[in-house]
Image (cartoon, rainbow, N blue to C red; front, side, top):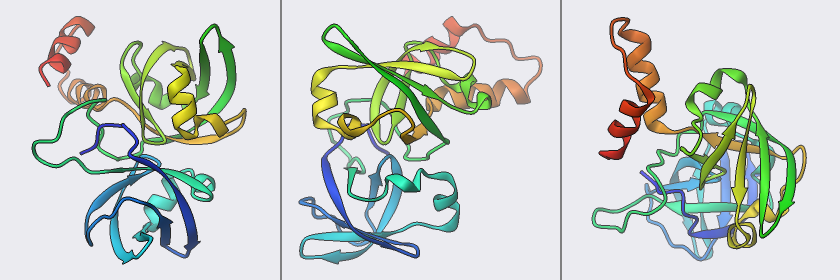
Length: 204
């Protein structure tokens, strides 16, 4: 489990076959789970200046692989007793989104991202979403796009500062939205309002 708060911007040393080697200040242990651009991966090698993880064919098929070069976001998995911030993130990327527009708005930035329409039901206005491992709040949702507002410190401290129109990003939708949708789709007689869904989410 993760929080969507980036620990470090690390550097890709190499990416060959299934092995991704990262140069980082953070020192994991073998077998540790670590989110790289939002995808939960396992550490398979340790170096003096970093570590390597394996990306299965399934992972490579789902992820925005073009972003696994140069710099990447990393966040180690939470430990028992860690302070919980951000939101509950599993490190399970649902889909790839594409940045359609970034607009400066007063002291922040509006970022518009498009996704396959089938994922829109899991993206909720004022709900949580993870973009390349960064925990963010959704402002508006349309037919196949949604809008985020990025504050200056987030823009400065994450890879959002490098993103532009056409950039592909890993997206993990809200876990509770996925669970509720799955329950409803398999229990025809179950009826929940969005208010009741919000109450369920607030318990966790």
